[in-house]
Image (tube, rainbow, N blue to C red; front, side, top):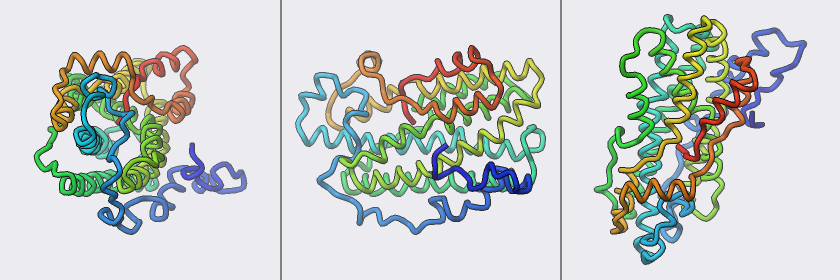
Length: 324
């Protein structure tokens, strides 16, 4: 857990139990720590037209000859389109995976904590995620306008993690469907911070973009703790067979987040007038894997779940090199 999200006095033995509760402390400090409570960022004021909008090292076809041979204008246009793609994928994940899981955990039929602190933390997370979607929308709007990319759009189903979640849920009902929804959201919230940290600390890219991602990153640090606290109790209350299923669903979620996105990056390349095929993207991904996902919060979670070393290593091994 980062210093920013470590609640004060979380292990102070003299405090009453409710004051040592992580969800109590996070929900109490919500107004001081989250992006939605901060002053709105002046996006145009932080826009530098001479800076690239996205790191070249994160473009999955960066080692393809056509990209290396492209002129400066084409490469810059591709990087601007990449920034739009990043935000559209983030929006799809928030809308299609995180928010449904949050709303689900408010339902009494799902055996997570439903005390005052837990319900407050979930509602606060829902507000945060909606605000992240607005942040993405606003940042993309500036980029579309300033870089003349108004025609570039992506469907939520363009992203592999969204379609893989739908495929995994197909045919599931009742508790197992609910567990799968929570597991996929947990995979997102416990592994995203390394990618966000790398993007938000890249001083070579557009200041507007870097600051926007950093605001998102700070919130996600807290969300990892909230999801961990909620799902540990959920897991411990499950029957052995359902525990096995939950671990399998978590591993499936991690694999889904590591799956390559093909059609969106074909579209990004086309903005620079490059023809990149899905097969070339798959090959490029094998040669140069994307950024690794953060395993620290996930390792803490697996330890809290009480998994033995073999079970934990089996889940951790599913993490591939792709970021949100």
